[in-house]
Image (tube, rainbow, N blue to C red; front, side, top):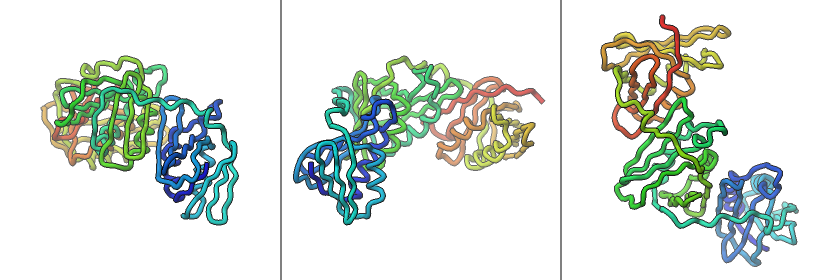
Length: 367
């Protein structure tokens, strides 16, 4: 194989597929498959759960393919000057040249690379890239990392009646986002996308206005210009999230999002490391936020709020879970809907029904 291309094109292609590399007892899974045909180079990397492909234009005097160690190839390309790069292979050795730099890099036979999954024929639709990215960012952090709870180790994607819904939960909190897509013409979909696949998707979806999505029986693909990500699906039943979302509340606290986020973040500096407990106390139109730790001290802050409901209330939350939600809500004001000190609370934009975050409270002693 012989190719000549711009160093930046090669580097960017490797950077994208590198997200699927893994260090296991299988050496081939730390390698990138490089295939040169026609006037472009195709790159692929896989961890057997997720496969990422990328391509870029290139002069190809001689077609061929080879597997090269991904991290080492990336390091070499990153340090080369911004100039033209040539790559020539002889057996499992690749020679990389750029100006006066020469590297001989040892690789593996292309035949050793796992078979790249074929794109299943299934339910396909197109989404604006920014909308898909926003939906993922508003849910992904709530997914469970406990591998014994396989059905919670991902983001649930549900499509029905021209609405796209994403849900994630770890049993202590739940994030739900919905987007209306009037042009959507696809049969109903109910699947769980693994957390690692979604995380890798976020890292590579940087270009193009739209993403082509296709859901098959056992896998899903996301296609963006010169990039394709294919992920296996989790074959398990996602919990009935509708039963988790409270349908009624007694108290609604409306606050400036930036103010509530900043105050909660400051107070959380003195929470106990294990519980991360911050205490909310609503009295009149003042919300006090406090935290205490025997090892570090005490923090207290007050915030003026608007309220619906006559009752005052005191409730505790894990500050990490609280801040995760406030961080991704973009509206100027947020609303915290509560029933009592032991029932789940709901955080959502003050206006709009597109995002709901359910958070379980931490029991606290009444003052």
